[in-house]
Amino acid sequence: MVGNLVGQHGSKNGRVGQPQFGVDIFGRPLYSTSVAGVQCKDKDGRLGSSLTAKELTAECKKVLNFTPQLGSFTLATTAPRDQAIQSKARQLSEDAFFPFSVQVWSWDDIEAEVLYRPRILEHFYRNISPQATIVPTIKLSRFTTKDFFIAYFTRPAVEDRLPEPLKTLFVSLAYELGDNAYRHGGASYFKIRVDDNRVLFSDDGIEFDPLSLEAPDTTNGPGKVGSCVINSFLKEYADSVSVSYRHETAFNSPGTNVIEFRFDGPLLPYTVENYYEFTVDWGSLPFGSDAAEQIADAIPLTSTIHEIVWNITEEWALSLIVHIIQRILSRLASHQRLLIYVPRNGMLARVLGRFSDEKLTVLPR
Image (spheres, helix red, strand yellow):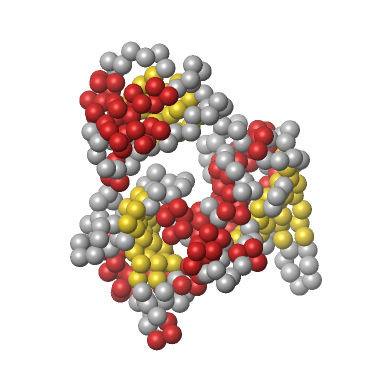
């Protein structure tokens, strides 16, 4: 999550001497609409120091005063991995007193994840060959936090092989298949591997072929959402992706369920989007027209993009918002449109309703 957050619009919180309320870095990670925060805590295991449950709880209490409210809090520490601390983090995540999930990244976890980040290795560890360490595989247990799951899909070795929007689809598939393996199959692990032309999901649970599930007439009721996700994927990509299931057995082993998604050709032809969607984090922006122009000019208006979708979640500096809109409209080609979702019953909906441009559509949420 640390690498994921920093790489996706993460910001340092304040400066030395200012109150930080338990957060060193904050931002909005991929696949999440809530803000995530990270606290870095230096512990040298070689000197006998370790992170305690009391310290973890104290850091979580500090975060309660952070604004905006976090949806996820990660304590990144140089202390070694500790089962008791992992258990405490899970306990705090389930505690209604804390309105956010809690994760702990030990130095063991950070060191392992850094090995999958060639840019970081090249910058800080030039004597290590990144290519020798990059393996696009992850093995998850039922206690693995969602941040490790998310971080896996942001590794360059995975992103290069699985570009959007297929990556988003496979994130959903991985969640459904993994949840099924643990919840119904009694699996102890769930493994994901992304190769150049295939994606493999495997687990050691009870033998079960999810491809045998029929598409439900409705998603109401337990157990139906997963089969709906799988069948929707198969229907959407029937002409370009072949899917198979097999159960592999080995001596003195319960066996392994393997689901293989194989692509007949390059992934790129199946991943061309005709729209671009974005939001703006007002708290991290400087005020003024220069900031507005930077936001508008950063939107990739390629010939394949037909629609720009802007989700405005809060009203702030209406003149700045209008400036951004005007700048985007001035860049649009004849076949492109701007669609903006705004807060219901706010001033912004009334102000933007006065725009007279056929390329602009404003809809209240």
